[in-house]
Image 1 (cartoon, rainbow, N blue to C red):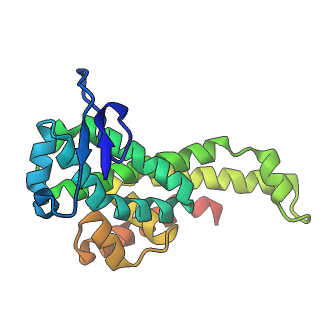
Image 2 (cartoon, one colour):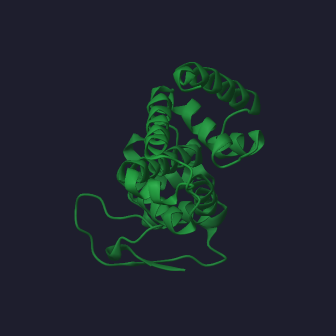
Length: 211
């Protein structure tokens, strides 16, 4: 694989604040960095090593794409979200406190990007479009009520702690198993179960008026 740093195209990293000379990063099957630990790669990337960051992107990009696609229901959107996540991560590598947990850190970033994309979808939905796709027996009042209920659900979700919201979304909208969620977010399965249970209890209370 060849990555031109000057082009700044994900999943390879973009440059930081200063301009750099164009160079090529070549990854071959006998590249010693392919077997390097995440912590080693993250430290090198944090020091500006584009090659190390490209290895990180190749290693964790597929899982990030599957994660985003399941959450968004769209492969095309997931590619955009993952690219955006890699660019954001490159710019914020200095904020990575524990290089050995770079995968978990990347998953959190792509999760935030996916949730942001879902919010954009919600904000651009309009009642007229919903009304057209609604069954004929649905009155305009019913369509508006459904939209308001959806908005109420999003408002309730926004009140959840971040990890609870991620776990709930992956379970309820992406149909992830508890084990899959634990793998994606680098959490114990027991922790995932607890967070989802608390999220469900909170949402039931918040949405009581709509029952």
